[in-house]
Image (cartoon, rainbow over all chains, first blue to last red; front, side, top):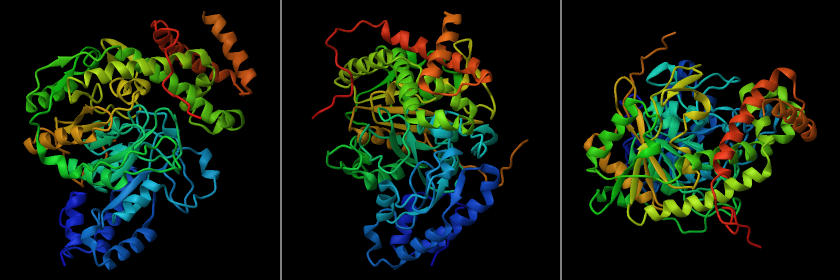
Length: 470
Length: 59
């Protein structure tokens, strides 16, 4: 039987194919992943818990399955942002406060669905406190570090997810995205990330942030791995009232259909103002490879971002009000001060934001009558240094923490599906968003896959020996 | 605006039952100012009176 010789860079699909064919044992794969996590985590800080015992038991169970070819993720190690319930662990959501909570009794359904497809959970991942973050920094657990430069941010709030996949610790991770928390770390860490349509994947048994905007989705190093894991996770769930009753729409089989017939445009105006040269270079490379010349304006995108900001502040504060009253000292001070301010936002202004949201959605859906996909930068810049507080947007020095998501917020605000694709610029990668109409994940993934075949987008491999530069 | 916002922050914290330490007030106020600026950008956009909010409850 073969052993892994790729130093952690095999895709989920390659691993599953080899395990299903009996050429590789799931136990070998998982032992290898656990050893790599033990080697790398002290300097990468992606994992906050490693579930080695259950992972080895699950791997044995996968090896014992006769019809492994029916398991599309047979033996694939994966990890989840620590706001997913994992049976036996407290669901931290990046906080100190939640450490006092009793352990979860049952896994999140998205973990159950991936494991039903043969994947093996190996641990929980670092994240910004209560997901109110774009940096990947955490005052309680330390920063998840960028795999391409350990002195730089992973991005957040799903920072550990970006680090773990980008560093080759696991081929697949799950994160959440309220305003950009899958797409920002994907951009900084050089991974592929899928934020599906709002309501497509169940959010049951996860710690929430902003119910109006919370999404879940996968990180991977190939488009195919996004598609295979997404297909395994689709399906209704009465435990999440937002989760759609639409039947699952499989995307893996249509990945290779190419770009023929797809009408694609580049988002101009707001989505290019303030972008650093590297963000524009990445966008230009992707547009050129896709043969896109048309530039369009997404109307009132700046107002959409503003409305998302207001709804986030208010709903996030409502979620945490009782903790702010009783345990304010136990929060990350930066998160606490934002949440307290959010509690003070008048309801009349929040309602205005929800009214604007419906209007904006109608305007953007009209664009999709003429275009199948829209390209936009994922972040204005490559990964900043850990601890950096400000950056220059349009020549104005702005606080970094809330502004990294200026290009992601107007998109998740109306729940559009997006694939963030990594453009391998040197010395640091940066992402581009491929945005599609609601429920058209297939289109965004097709575009991503076609770009990957040309080499325009790829998850840049990181040498395992890379160590922190203090 | 600035002084009245100081007063508002204090009054709102008291009304909401949030213990607000003096050292936290500048950051809370700064965050609230930013959020209110964003809210103004939305509120100044004219929409008809019968425009519905995005979440729709169904009985």
